[in-house]
Length: 420
Picture 1 (cartoon, rainbow, N blue to C red):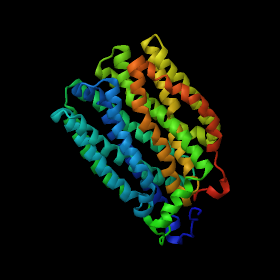
Picture 2: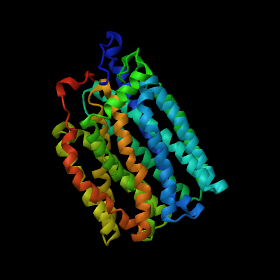
Picture 3: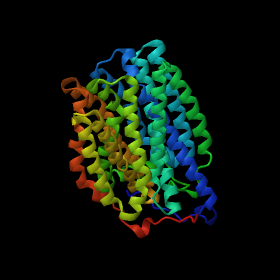
Picture 4: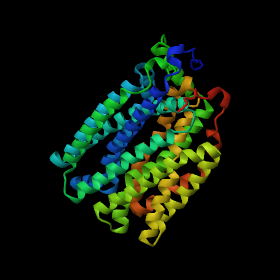
């Protein structure tokens, strides 16, 4: 059974006004930024949680796995939720879970000292973040098409900026001995309130940018989801995004801890190293849109993958601290475009964007499921810093997948351009 085709859109909703599209663009950017703030705030306090719970590298990897499990559980259904309820409602509901997860994980670590409670909070955080991820990417792709230019990486740059802010706040909280619980509860309140307000400015549901016919039944939506799992291009994009997610996620999960353990840095300095990585990601995602529009996906992604290979290698193997920091920055630059461009490629056909983005996200988030415990177990044997060499080893063969991200039918996927 093939996925449902797009239906004609009513004239008053098919082309939202330029002001509506620009407001939606800004709202999506805010949503990405606040989601990044939530996740970055958590990752910046991982060393403090490890100390509070007295965890080995292997046990820490298992704890981080809980967040990945939550995200992976969200992925098979989040595209269907976005189709059924719209991106705005899905994002708002998901962010409630993000806020609850941050609160439970933070208080569980510092007030109760319970491994199980922190893990439960991380499952909620992962589920909420994963569902929000799919919905805001679907919304971002719709806005990108209506603007008529590449902008998805800039939304992800907003996510990175939020992560930078989260890392900076985390470093400051660690420096001034602010408890993990108090820090994460405050972040949860800000993220929930800001996202709920921003989602109100998303594209009108009547514009039907999720490709969901008004009379679609739950069974029809499930058939569309299953059909997407049989599409070779969608599956190959998912494999590419898996490696891109591992490249980014390895740094998110382990970079601060690896530099603390492998280079004898303080907790605050480790959070600072993570901030360098995220700054590199942000710069790459901001400047990368210009490069993508000028040269296209294939040559730009081939170049950034090469940067990530060199950067990750330097971060691990460099004998000099400053050279290692340069490697971290290059790693961030090189990792910046893979995930967002993969999501844009999955959403090239607007009629099937939600289900295809959901499928790609499921495959991609497998890296977040397997990455933390794998690197943790390897780290127990060779050290957490050396374990990060898995990143360049996986990136090199990924170059063979880059051509699949080329838009398949430019004439059919051309956006309705909004003139600024």
